[in-house]
Every structure is written in structure tokens, then in C-alpha cells.
Length: 445
Ligand SMILES: Nc1ccn([C@@H]2O[C@H](COP(=O)(O)OP(=O)(O)OP(=O)(O)O)[C@@H](O)[C@H]2O)c(=O)n1
Ligand SMILES: O=P(O)(O)OC[C@@H](O)[C@@H](O)[C@@H](O)CO
Image (cartoon, rainbow, N blue to C red):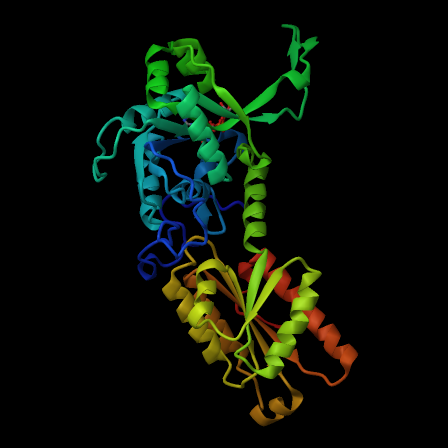
């Protein structure tokens, strides 16, 4: 994967902002691709996302939290993971002073809500401390939010955090004063002598890796930072230690899922992109227009794609109840058997834009033009590839990736089955890879 260093001025792969007045947010009831867990948290919870580092270990010019994949900086995935949690009242993003404008631009571009930005410090603890203290102050443009009872602290470069685990951390922090995520060690920890030789190794089963998120009652984390030493600020890496050392608060440790890992090296950005792509490509819906031929093809595709690990729903259109697919699906296959087929695709693109879904992730629309030989002779030609390319170029500006697959019906059963399998394989690959390079192409099955 080529890691797109975000252009500090503007990121040209961003969709046209004017066309998208607002990010599709999960809080709009009934319009969510994320069903709130319905968990009830009856005390105010705020979040601090330390994002003030330089990401040196990636070897990239751009700090890793601002590196983009799938058209979005890494940090927006993390912010989105917290925004979709209804019981979180506010998110404090802490960035280096020189990145304040960039962060403000990202918040506007992706219309993140509940988010404030404050300047960080020279170390992670200093940044976190700035974020925690800012929670206690009124921020411009924010309503008079309550001072939080619990503060969740989470590295901004850990994008894969789920509501259920956040709930466990928040509830444990309220009960115990502090709580933290842990994971089993994957390497044994050893102590070395000053000459660089093995001194001793630790019994791995007795130790765990400290991860994020961590939670603290506001009083505990404030007190810890008020009492800790300069050396803690300069060299420390563990908030749970500060709570124990300076507040006598013994954190509750909760084993978290493997998804809590931190983006540290350049390869981790490629891994994060791959995980997001995998999440987006698990399902698709086929719109048949109700024609018998299209339904036959869709049924055959459903069987073929089953082997390719993509769950397919077959629907006649996106009207009525089926409009819900516009709000939860990331991949659409439009089967057209009519000669005036592009109008169907244009209508779908319009509906997708109106649903305002493409800002979170690039949507995939695959137009399968299914022409019987006699139809070709009647229509003479299917829609010109240039027309599809033009439509795709416009759609791409809206973060919708339009691809075409041409399929000729054959009366020979074997040939027909081979063609259907090819359509399934091509469609699966387009959905999985979301390659900008193939946008507008009319691929032959
Ligand atoms: N002065 C700092 C240093 C780090 N962080 C944040 O703390 C989190 C975890 O730190 P780490 O992975 O070490 O990030 P960096 O310090 O940027 O990485 P590196 O050590 O490779 O420079 C990151 O979200 C980072 O932006 C911060 O807010 N302020
Ligand atoms: O040490 P780094 O700055 O790479 O990352 C911070 C991590 O240490 C920290 O997130 C967890 O160990 C939990 O404290």
C-alpha cells in the first residue's frame, strides 16, 4: 500500500466537501450503520485522545495520526469509533501546536461533533495532562457540558476500539477509580546487564502488556497529574502507574480484544487499511430491477459468491423498505438488462449521494450489464465505455467508486456458468480492493 502522506495544505483525494454538508453520524436514530448497544451509562463520560506525537518510528514525514488511507486520516477512524458511542459526551483531541489548524480542518471536513482540540506537550504524559485539564474548562463553541465523572484516555493511533469494551472500562473506572486494557505478551521480557548481556528473563505468564483504552475518575487522573514528578512527565508511559503511585488507586485490569493494537510502524498503517477494507467488503446487495434475467443472474451470483466469502442480498430496487440498504451497505451491484442501462446507475448514484454515506468510507457500485446476443443485435451497442467512464469520474468526486462488468448471455450452460463465476470473482475483487485505478472500466466477464 502506498501510504498517502496527508498533504498538510489539502488532501486532493478528499471528496468535494461542498457536496457533502455533513458526515453521516451514527447518532441519527434509525439512520445508523451502527446499532447503539443500548447500554445505559448514567454518569458523564469524556474522552482524551493524545495525538501530539511525531510518529518517528514510521519513518514518514507526516505524523502517523494524520496519514491517510481510503481517503481519510487515521485519526478520523479513531474519532468516529468514539463519536458513535452515544453515552460519551465529549472528545478532547490533543495535538502538537503546529497541527492545530490541520486538526481543526479535519474536524470540519469530516464534520466530527463533540470534538475539541487542545495543544499537546513535548511528551505523551504532558499531552494527556493538557487534555484532562481542558475537560474541566469551558471550551469555545461547546455547550456547558458537565465535568466528566469518568475520563477515558485512548491513544489516537488505536483506531479499532469497540463500544462494548469502552463500556467495561468506563464502568470499572467508576467503581475502582481506574481501569485499563491489557493483552497477553507475545514476546518474553528480559532484563539486560549494563554490558548488554542477559541478566534474567521474566516469567511471561505473570505479566501482561498494558494497552488502551484506560479509564479514570476525573478526580483520580487530575490528582495524579497534579502530584506526579517532572521525571514522570518526561519519561513515563503509564497512566495507571501514576494513579497507583500518587493516588493509591489500584487499577482494575481488563483483558481486551486483539484489535486494541497501536499503529506504531509504517506497516501498521497498511494493516489498518487492510482491516478497514475487510470490514467494508463482507456484504453487498444486488439490485435486479425485477427482470427475470437479472434475478436469474443474481441467484447464480449468490451461489458463486458464497464461495468467495461475500454475503449477497438480492433486491428488486432501493425503494420503500429496501431504502435501508442505502444506510447500511457499502457495496452495490446493479444488474441492468435494458439497453438504456446507465439511467439506472445514475438513479442509484443520486440516491447514494442523498443518503450521504460516502464520506465515512468509499462506496462501491458495480454495474453489471447483462446483454443477450439478440439484444445486442437490436440495440447495436451497449452504452459507450466513455459514458460509463464519465459517470464514474463524477461519482469518484463523491467518494463513490463505479465499476462496470460486461456479461453476454450464452445458451451453452457450461459457458454461462464460467461467465457467472467470472462476474462473481471480478465483483468480489472490486469490492475487496476498492481500487481507484479500475474506476470507470468496463471489465469483460
Ligand atoms: N508528545 C506526545 C507524544 C505522543 N503522543 C501520542 O501518544 C500516542 C501513543 O504514542 P506513540 O505511539 O509513541 O506515538 P509517537 O510518539 O508519535 O510515536 P514515536 O514514538 O514513534 O515518535 C500517539 O497517539 C501520540 O500521538 C502525544 O499525544 N504527545
Ligand atoms: O510507549 P509508546 O509512546 O509507544 O505508546 C504508549 C503506550 O506505552 C501506552 O499506550 C500503553 O502502554 C498504555 O500505557
